[in-house]
Image (cartoon, rainbow, N blue to C red; front, side, top):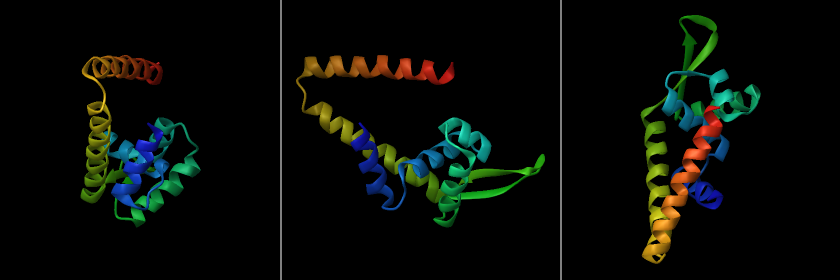
Length: 129
């Protein structure tokens, strides 16, 4: 799974680290969002998020602006290119997983899909607790 994550990010972007991509995905999901919230969502230090987001701004994938409600905060939002990048990675990941699942016998495939469902629900519970 990690290899699929890494390869799809590299294929779609050729330049982003997995952390940078995760920051981009978070901004797509939570737009507009502060750098502090991105750091919390990714469970990484604010300085790491700042570096990652600065690279994303330089790459034309994110835009930032002062928060009109709190001038000490910076709001992040994806550019159209940033949204397209996330969509492309998602499509590539689905295609990679589909290709793997298609190589499995039908009864095994059904078990794997069911297991992924259980895994996703458990992962979601652990992140929302």
